[in-house]
Length: 416
Image (cartoon, rainbow, N blue to C red; front, side, top):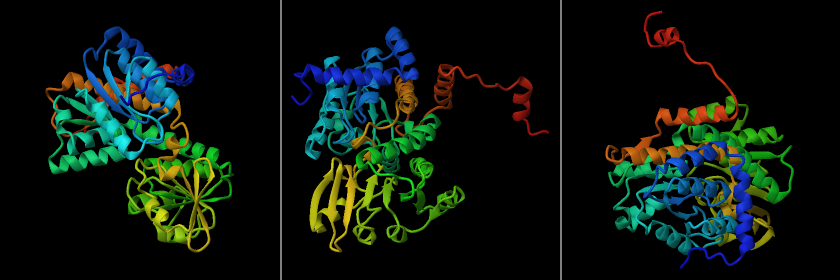
């Protein structure tokens, strides 16, 4: 049995403290908890969930369980699971298959075990649950009504499946909801990436040259926060429109080949592989710092670095040093994995409150419309997006204007 057995009571106590802390700062989920506890909308529904297993995710699990769901839970990165939080969920009676520092083989087994209950609904982050069903265990997808995908990388994988005509069930693109990507990807990633880099290096950001690979929503947040901390920001891009946007936002734009000679800190957030190659690293300054904010650890060529480095040693917790053939050292954070969650606590609670509220309502949408949905990637409805936004404004005691009948008529008319 690979799920947790809570032998250390203090471990579960620590996890519960973390969960209680974020719960006090997640009003959307707290309100849904009360509603779900009363109405039990997921009574008898089996949900398998793979999201970075820390306190905010644990509270999402509690909310779904309060709604009657039969939950089976795992993480979505070998380094992001927090053992005390997982232990707290087990103590609450949930099935958990994850632990910090699992090997890739163990991680894959945890994904498979999470699916063995043959879920009705999947909640995924990066597409590993869906990927397991489609690549190795299609039998575990026989009872799936549909699922929700949390992040850009997962949605990219799903769209590739849909294009090839192999997607076995509908999947809601939670990542593309406005209440998710406009805030989670930008403000959440922007803050949590720099929180992790600063706590793990204890170095100043002001005055340094920061190279941000990509200029999607996550990279926009990373660049924005670097600039606010006093860094000189360089952006690398392949999209000419995004490159223009980065320039107009006040950043330098150039190829990685040139940026690699100038940067002090490099952060990738593209979702692609080998964005920073060994050749780029050979251009870099001594003790340049490399971090990845993309979902998978493929953006920095760690494999090439491991094969060619003259020496490797841990310079500090979560900071691995590699001595190159030119005598310079490269410092890689969190093994090149998702730096803000593999080596820190992830996005702020208030940000994940919005994302996970979209998850809850999207899961409910799947349950209520399961017989009508096509085997495609589905956008989050405007109604769900607006419902989450309205609920949050209400929690903040903020009122906004509404259109009058005259304004609605004018807006919908072609006549001036």
